[in-house]
Image (cartoon, rainbow, N blue to C red; front, side):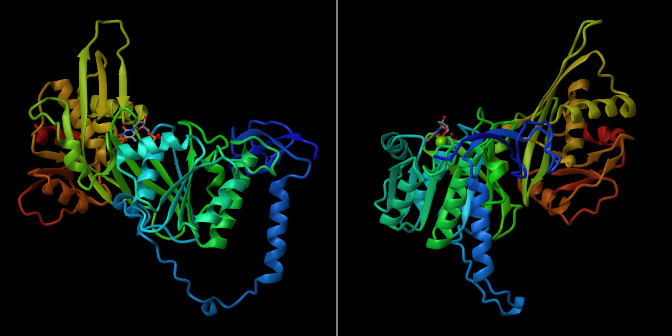
Length: 454
Ligand code: TYD
Ligand code: MG
């Protein structure tokens, strides 16, 4: 029995430290050290040594042009929004990590993926009983005879199951609840998670089977979770959304077989996750016309244009009370900056107003191109005047009140026109594409934009 000892492992660079420290002395990252228990001879270290030895003896360096092309052809999963993110589908022998907060819908999505898979697919549930998974499968209509289900937590059992049924796709839900019995560490610990992932990567390559690992992340952190697996796996998919809303976003954070700038959109329904091919339509469905404080912005996420409504509401406070600022879907520091610009450059006083700003549909706006729309929504709320209902606004707002150019202007404007908007307000110096119906309005400053918007 090896002697157990406590170590602290950096979840960013995997360096081991004998003592806890606020900063990793190897990679300088802050607050990344997590406690772990390892055997006397750390399995992480021993595996690394074994691999480098076999590489030395077996791998012959060759001129790059002499290397045979491998057919890394991806197999579509059958879930088109997921295939869009994967740039085609899953590559045999690859390992994909799907990470997201608990309850966001990872198990649901992966059950749908195994259900839609064209070959034999094995779903390993290490969190729920087979009966529980069956209930969910019934609800979302997954029942094919080539969709196999096993409830297992031990890596040995999982590998044995793969051996027996020879699937072309294996889903492991989740990597934090399985354990390799030969590793003296609890499931979910850094050593155990990493060791299991490492073994599964080897199995995937050896059998040419695509493996998807589910990994939980917490809102703020990455403790013993997906972050430390990012360099072990081929692809990292992040599954995001606001649990109180139905919209879910899927994107590739890392992808060895394709681009990482595609966004996949799903709606969580009673029947599981439904792909949303036309997100703008869904996001604008409940929009009220003629209400002060509402402005639509054609934002862009990855390559995908998305029309989003931003809203603002202001109420007067009694003198002496500090007014509230509430931001949802937009950074509160960004909101504070835009309020300051509106006050100083456009003369709209907010000092005695409470301000509520939000982005509709649970979308998070990190796009600087949405500044102008947010400013106009705030101005519209403060002046209690609606902006033109058929107008979209685009532009980054600088501290001087100037409207700056945005990326992918053409794609955004075309999406706005497709959705029936007739006026597009853009930065004065941006080149606009030829439009069929919509007219282009230009503003160099926030004051000019406010004049044009009402
Ligand atoms: P789940 O897939 O279990 O999330 P995760 O694996 O990421 O923890 O599902 C999350 C939530 O989705 C769950 O609280 C219930 C809801 N849900 C639906 O709204 N519709 C459905 O068809 C299913 C299966 C789940
Ligand atoms: Mg789950």
